Picture (cartoon, rainbow, N blue to C red):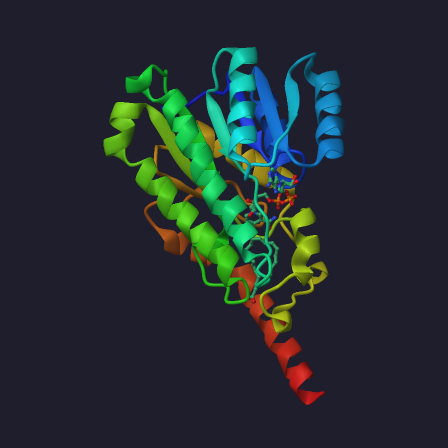
Length: 282
Ligand SMILES: NC(=O)C1=CN([C@@H]2O[C@H](COP(=O)(O)OP(=O)(O)OC[C@H]3O[C@@H](n4cnc5c(N)ncnc54)[C@H](O)[C@@H]3O)[C@@H](O)[C@H]2O)C=CC1
Ligand SMILES: CCCCC/C=C\C=C\C(=O)C/C=C\C/C=C\CCCC(=O)O
């Protein structure tokens, strides 16, 4: 059965830029009644809110300044959205960073995994049919780094693998039957967003990739894939959004994702090897 976004209230963490902002746009395109954007980037959040309220009508989007790692602020933001809209039907846990430096790896885990779990469990509590809720959907952002092996980013990859496992367990049919809470996982291939600018903060400097040489996925394709997965996905399903191709359900066959993703990443591996050889020759 296809699910509809018409009239739904959604909350997107880290929704002020990149894939999150494109997800906000796609949710509104699909008829969402209201979208709350939680982010630490106040200027970008306000600009997005104003732009989309002009386009779609007053009070369609609310920006809330929120660091997802702060428990009180996160729960406060959920409460504010519930008070304003009566309910939250869809939670998109998008906020994430890629910083595998030894100095900052704990923040990467905290944002990408701990806060995502906290947000999911809070959403679960609100939406759970046996706890007074009416069901809903949680969409958690993993990555091709949760499906394939990218040795240059071990910490980021660990968080994304854990997100994948957490989401497929929480969304399992045994839970879904009772909770009415669908949990989906999205795996994106490399997508052209500000996260690439932090490509300098790598675990291993020799792995530096020049992304300018590749045709990267457009963030709009990733945002569209999120709403496609929302419409079609069963609970605990895993979706791949790579190279601007339509969203692909890879729950049963992760090798499909390999097939699609490897075309791009084999080329990256070659570039990396060349870079390493050049360094050795210096
Ligand atoms: N761009 C890519 O190639 C891929 C991205 N992803 C995932 O998609 C998600 C979004 O990434 P992008 O849009 O690419 O990055 P981005 O850097 O454009 O967006 C991330 C957003 O999260 C916000 N954010 C960061 N820390 C936060 C915090 N503590 N509290 C609240 N908001 C916070 C940022 O301000 C920003 O608006 C991340 O989870 C990322 O891991 C997954 C696969 C590929
Ligand atoms: C090596 C750092 C890549 C930085 C790219 C920026 C963001 C990507 C976020 C993702 O979730 C995508 C996941 C993996 C990166 C894909 C390819 C990098 C290849 C790295 C390698 O082979 O060494």
